[in-house]
Length: 203
Length: 203
DNA sequence: GACCATACGGAACGCGCGCCCCGTTTTGCA
DNA sequence: TGCAAAACGGGGCGCGCGTTCCGTATGGTC
Picture 1 (tube, rainbow over the protein chains, first blue to last red):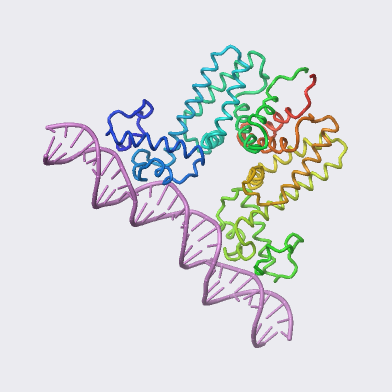
Picture 2: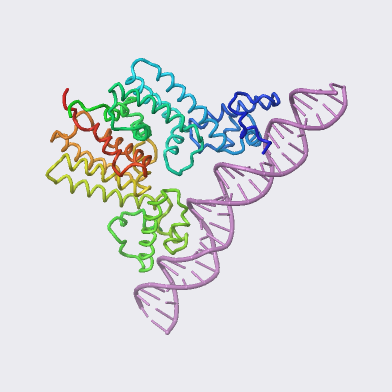
């Protein structure tokens, strides 16, 4: 329990201070390799493949992350954090409608580029389906909710939808875009689906 | 090559005529068990599990279907055929708009009930991703296209979408509904997403 | 420069699962 | 009823992959 530097809180702060130099370097390499590999293939990449790309042995990976899933979660946590940052930045913008729709599209696009993000978003929705990055999803949902509320306040999004709907629509858009991957321009389905969020002209 | 009664054309016609009685019975049992098991768990159910449910040995399954995937395809083919039937029936109806939207919703609902259908629909979209039920998907797309064309002719669906868009939206809806599975009533997301297919009031 | 804790690497283990093999049973025809 | 062909069943093989183990190399300290 006191072995792995992964579970304690001294993980996010940055570089895990008290650690031998090569260990810190290898940890970074593993993380980088995992990011790349998970992005391309999702959770299904063999762990040995990640080790190879990182130029280390499988044992080394396990010394830094207790399990393959833990490594996956670390990658996801980082990606999610970036999304949340993005959301908060945009929330300060001038045009709430544009902020919301741009963030929505941006998120879908990142999910298209990173298979791991797809899988995390899809899994995060399920009720009791594994939710690895515990608080991470909550933070994302909060950020999305904030943008949504502002957009609704500005009349850019209809009032009878909530974060749950939008989150589901987002996951749906990822599916759609993947379906038409190279037969339609990027964002085509997002644009189509987002129409359903805009207020109807006449009631 | 002359061993399996699966690859030749004498497969779809119904009950594979020249076959020992027990063989025919077992084949039916396997198919039924597979339908149930694939519906619940998708392609990931162990083949042994299907054999157990059917009350036969694994060898028996392989005598009737050369591969696990072949069995999967057989199940999918049957489900797809039902969908196509459904589409053709509705195409004869009076209200093209209702026919289209009802078929759309019905398809999503069936996909929610059968994980295999989800997987088949999702896989069928990709360009070079395996497309097991070769012509089956085409037939489905054709049926959907027929309903779409009629609905557009009646002004119930906007003219600037085509079958590819609709098919993608359909797959997206399956994702969305799964996301909100037990936190929203059935069809909630479908209703939302379908709004984007309706013509805008004013231009 | 020497020493020991720390970290490394990759061989090895266990497990799940698709698929095959072959001794045994069943079927249907003569 | 007898017999050959057809079908059965489930044990077993091979493989991929997550995880562990341990002999070896390396880094930081005295």
